[in-house]
Image (tube, rainbow, N blue to C red; front, side, top):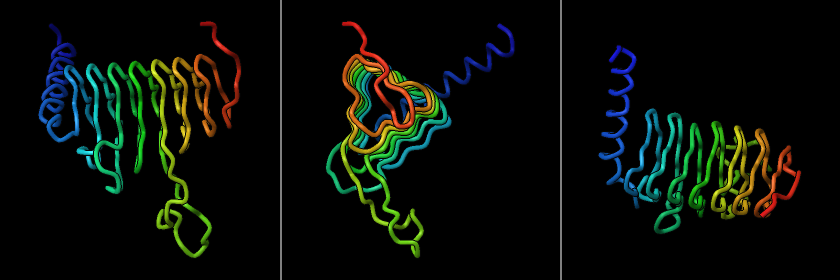
Length: 186
C-alpha cells in the first residue's frame, strides 16, 4: 500500500464515519448511503435519503423555511449526485436510480424581483411549485431545474440545460430553455 492508497482509505473511513454520525439528524437515512465531505446541509430533519445513495463532495441540501411538516426533500434509493445543490421550501422529490452530474441546481422556489429598492434576496418568494425527478432519469452537468417541473422516468437532460417545463418520460431534452431533442425507444 502506497501513501495515496492510505490517504484514500482514510478519506473513505472519514466519510463513512461522518455519514453514520449525521444519519440520525435526517428525517430518514437509508442503509449504505454515503455523504462525501465537504457537505452543507440546512434543516436536515426535513430531508429524507433512501438506501445506497451517494452524495458527492461539494453538495448542498437546504430547506430554508420550515412551513411544511415532514420531509421536504426526498431522495430515493440508488441516487447518485456530485456537487449538487437542492433548495426546497415545499417539495423536491428525486425518485430511485436518478443520476445527477456535477454542478446541478434544483429548486422548488424563486425570489421575486419586482421592487428595485429591495435586494432580490430579500424579496418574498413569488413562485413555489413542487419538483419531481422521475425514476432512472439522468441530469447532465450544470443543469438547472426550475420550480414546478416534472422530469419523467428515464429522461435525459443534456448538460448546461435550463429546464422550465415538464419533460416527458424516455426522451432527451437540451438547451436553454430545454427543448425536446428526441424520444427514446422503449
